[in-house]
Length: 407
Image (cartoon, rainbow, N blue to C red):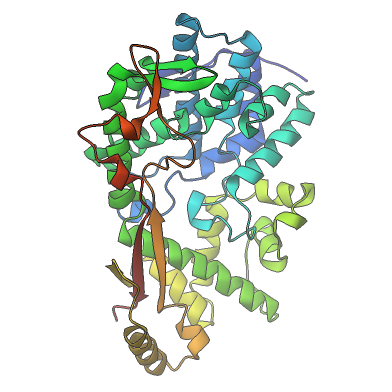
């Protein structure tokens, strides 16, 4: 493989200069699979609510790698045994952890490829890259999947206090202008250590961790699950669903070659292969927005109207409730819109629909955030925190929504 000068520097608005520490990292960033992330938005359609939220998965991947470099060096300085190969593999794992995201990130997950998470697709990408790079990603894949013996390495990549979360909270807070999400990631990293093979936070880092958890709660309810962003994402999902339905009926829709592949073929995890991945790798936000612009003039009322609503930000009205939506109320909105627009019930349900959203800030039944006391004991943060009611944050919060046209 031809190699060029590798040790480049990226100027990041969050952390300043981010250096590329190894030629392999540079080659992975240069690969078309990774370059595609420049065209995948980090926060989907959130820019319809927060105009500055146009940053990409490319930004986030580099930022996460930067924090990982700091974490690795800090742990080494504290005497934690991390070899050079493990260090490089950690950087590769965090760099590629989101490479499997499709257009508009989480907004269209499970839509293009049914019942398939971005983590599954990320792993597929990594396995192909491992072949391309002569097995040099093997350890990174083991760390990513959690099969590597040193569990704390996986916890740095994927846990409730990992480099992924530290970066996206700080980055998304910056680009949305929501100050409540801003965290001191560097401060948190200095509090990390390893005990009995697991990542821990020293007791003096208790309050920064509490702030991190509260910031995550604020960002989810104020930003990630913002009701306007939620209805925009549901419209996007319905656009793709309607397009697939029309294609099955033999209706011709103009779209890019890659998008057409997923409109014509029903793909799930069992059918995911290298051909599917090749087409998936060609997909980005541009394909979707180009199709939406094209379909906004389509004679099918449902498809064209949905597309126009996204383009012109004429979104549906959404009502959020703490309890399930009354069936009679739902039927009232559905029947009125169906009669007004002379649609079938199935067509009207593209515009009048209900659902629910869930969030758990701290899942103590999954991976714990461990606090290291001065006497060497380790305990779950939920049993240590005094100012933060972590028991309530550990409960799943569910909200129910009803969407319908304002007009």
